[in-house]
Length: 397
Image (cartoon, rainbow, N blue to C red; front, side, top):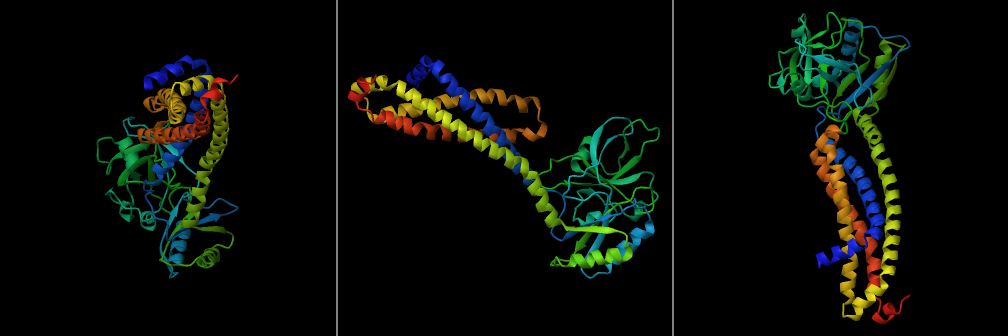
């Protein structure tokens, strides 16, 4: 039966070419959306490396650049810890769940292991505030005062890129570039994960250098606050008032991380939603075109169908033939699409965004959608052909 259907399709190859191209286009389109969705699902299941339920951040806004004054940071920390709702306070260069990033080039002292790494300068209590467990080593603290290099905590990916096959704690690395005396960093600890943009951020090498108030010119403008569980949203006004009481010229933007996370996830899902809407619209257009071509092809084959009916073929056999032919055409188009698309993970053109897990998941979803679409578009033309009587078909002109 299959061999007979293949012969019939080959004899009508010129008619089926346009149909196959439409199916191929639909398959590639659905694959793109499915790959986005599967990758997002894969990323969502990975840990971000920090907690967000009882953490708030306060971003300081000033007309003049904030000075790195040790007394200012100490006063802020002590004053906020006096509030009964506050458990811990830390400072960071950048907020989490926002698009801001700082990236630098780093390498081992001998020039090997060159790696681009995201950087987030933080104070000593940052790990405790954000509930970031150490996988190996320790967090930096006052015991690192006077160290010969800036203490840093790396995520696992950065440690593997810089020191492949070695234990990272205790290792030294430097900032890349042409500086005569590049900045030096000493690894004191490693965390498994840190994705500052949240669940849909691709894992990247990350380092958290120690910030020590009063050292250097750069100041940190983000205050991270760990609150007691159950602290109401109304605490925002009290927290803002306490900060502005110390520095009336500052404006402060306070955001619970739960709200920042929800806003960030919504923003990150916009490309997927837009692509899905466009794909759905184009898929509907393809379905109409597919249905029209199938209808036309079935109409042209009425004499052939009448002859088969006159020779004793049952209506169910005609129905199954029409549907089977369409599914075989879809299989051919999917196979061609597979040959083209598999080059992407093989060559690594899209990096980890299209790894093998994403590829096979997207392939299964897109093939399922195409088979379903082909089946639905062939049901009515197949039913119409099956209902023709031999007399009607043989007298058709």
